[in-house]
Length: 292
Length: 278
Image (cartoon, rainbow over all chains, first blue to last red; front, side, top):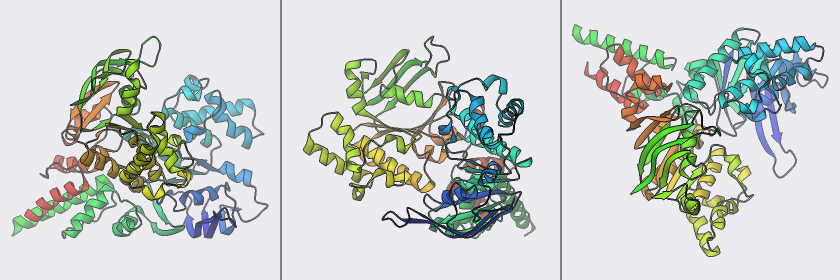
């Protein structure tokens, strides 16, 4: 399913002294199959935007379609849409609520897939928990609150992917995890992305994470998309990102410093690629030096 | 003066004492030090922090704060006045609906006279650069601002030690910078002892000393640069190198004789040196 937003606007607390316009005309297309990154500082409108994608926030201005679903149409089947567009909020482990892991993961299915038999549901829950790397038999009857932080987050993600959404949206999925935990989580998302989940959209403050994982990305600022493209294109505009109060990947910062001193490294800003490109420059310079 | 001392401390969350979260830690932190504590989730970092201000008491061994034993209940109050703690989630640390009331909460509880409280609010809000938000509502502030208010709330008690338990984890890059700037300033200008628990290696690099915890034990202790140059050892504790150090190591392994680098600036310098020479 392709996501197309045109001129999307949204105002919180309209017609009140607290009115604030969060989206001021967002134009953005996210193609099916992308691993898409959304960047922006706090208050830039990125969360407001993603909450539109499964109609948690109803469209009030502009146009938005997700696959065949036209969200401006009042007769749009929002329940079906929500089962196809899964949303994992920031720190999703805070939303666990049921007595057991199994009941927690099952909750979405019970709401979205009322036609399922108990056996079918149990199978789906097992599959979801195994996908996120948990042992179904060991955790199913545990209270989610007995688990470690990383495990809780996995249970929460299982609760969303149990309906096999075609589009999975995650707000800061790796926040608060240690570096290895972050890496494992991103690997998990790439595994999910290969199968029934066609499109993954992540909101992230970690620019290195965007550079290393995303096929395309968009930068939000003051309710608008101000930059979009491949991470390599976005991060080659370091100055612009700095002026928006954003960071760039470590490699981009380094490339910028080198550029100021007349050394230009053309890289996609992943650490491995950056190292390879620097090595190539060094080897070329060495050979050139010897030739003279 | 010695600010914090751990003598063979063991702590277990379980009644039978098994699976200790902190397992035989001995350690000494001097007043004025800026110490970063690293380690995977579940390695015992937060437990270590909570043992310092007597939120937890050792199952065995002894923790002292400026010579005061945390196990001595009569000193609990004094210890908590000396060691303030800032937690991860800014929203969980707000108690009042107005910033100044929130900052006043700590001093009110320890019985500071009214006139003095006003002065302390000024001092604390100045220190974190939030004076103009004195009458603002915390819920309408950004994450970085809220954390700075949480820090001000701790400062108003005039502690000698500030413990930050992943206090920047929920912030955006700008918020993280704001908080780290305040913390560094408190350490440099006021000689505040800072114990910073973090997953962000760039924050750890700003400390004078880094401690790595693994399965409840202190396994590495030294200058951050020294610790991050022991990459094989870090790997065994499931910790990753700062990205700049990773690139640097890759270059070195491929035969490029770059100097050790831990930040983007150092890496650029190291690369430049070689490329301009040849």
